[in-house]
Length: 252
Image: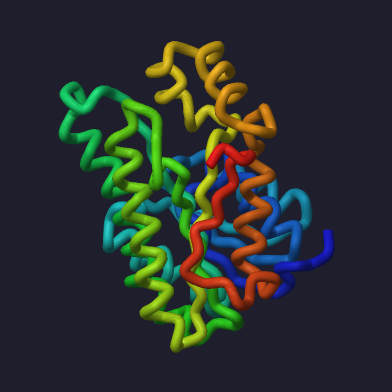
């Protein structure tokens, strides 16, 4: 590794598995110290793997939809790290159903975990970023925020909200030197997409959709999306803000 995150102090939400775990491990391998906030205790295993590999990572059990919990996360992280330079909001959920069959609780879950968590991270994290070095926020959006398959109304709406929030926050915080961007993946081959795959009729149907709609003829990998988080968190993207970085194999 080249040390692209050397000395960077990061708070990352949602790193129990999949893209979040890959991002936490990549950040740490590139020299960052990472505090992981997640409600899933498996995120503690991610932090342990990082430490076993010689990196710096800590796990703080956190309900990212709860304001008090997020305030505590950022306070604890700043004390542990001596400040915060990067916020990476990866925590998310996905449920799939026709709109008339969608439970109100599922709609609310999408909004509270996916979109509200980004708001809370900004509300409680920006005061620390103001004293950070080359401060940046990277949010997890989705191509579903622009257009999604049938059955993902709640998920798509929450991701569209994140894209709009990212652009607005970039305009608000740009004069302070804080960059705000989001990553918008297409199909990524992780269990996170199991709900929509099931709704589509199974893996064979998903594979057919990928072949028909993705020029690169495959799904993305978690490590490929982690690299996008890395780019937007470092000075390699020092003149990029308010951007939704689409990573979908050419589908859009």
